[in-house]
Length: 171
Length: 218
Image (cartoon, rainbow over all chains, first blue to last red; front, side, top):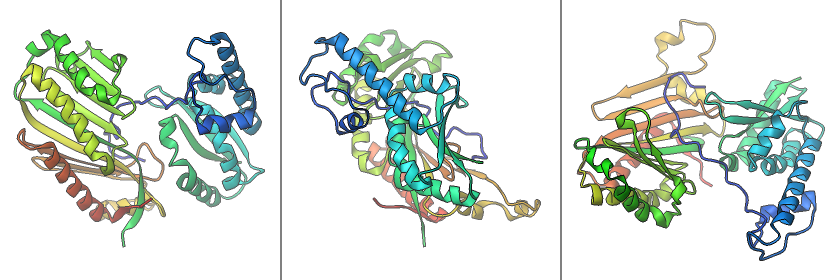
């Protein structure tokens, strides 16, 4: 919490690093990991940008839909389309949310409920809150969140450049 | 014993004022922009990473070059230029200086502008591994103010300014449970970039010692 009115950043808003695209020759480890979660066929190795473009686009859309369904299985989503729209507009976030889920269960418990909420910051930029619904004591959830941040999240936070925040609500 | 901290967010910014504003150099922008573009190309600068700024006051207009992969922005205006790098740390200082030097050299080569005062600053969001951020800030809260309310102080800020130096210590507005520290210095146009970096590093070490923190390794 700041007390002094001064800019505390460089003023640049760098877009999240978007994973490599399907048409690229080699596949990154994270993409392979994602595929192991959501399934689906491999796109042809060594294909160029224009080879099978329609097929690749359709495959990409199907893969993204599967990722969204996987997220909906792990998180409570609002009834409106705010979260889906935010995820669709910031394609680097869904893989990160999905990757976070097992770690959230590790730090906060397998039976804990998690939800997603879309909002905007003071500058109007979108921000996604992953909320832990905590039935216990506030000191316990703060301690768990601290460990989650220190041991897992802070090393990855730069990949989504402030678009994703983990927080909690007492229930 | 110093408290272990991490620095999840940091940035460096360098503002260089010209000896005098030079509007002439911006009349023939294409040559200036081409020269800077050529010299920054080794760092994956693309044409669409150049943003012409044509609104606002004349001093705010110019060209902004962005290197997204390096999280660097480089603004050239008619009266000053400004360089920033996000997530900068000392391990990449050499590369940062090389990019800064390349951009400045290209600009000077075609515009023949001479530089005046340079202001360099570093901002870091320091997050303690254990304990609350207010434990770091508490020694800087004036005791006369602490006693006027029963409840504990939630946050505080202190800004100290000298003729050529400024230090800001505040709670972080960007991270939970973190302290924001920014230290800036004015350098002469004759100071080398390396000398500026060395001085800022000494300043950081001094301030970390005063705050009682040290960056956790690994």
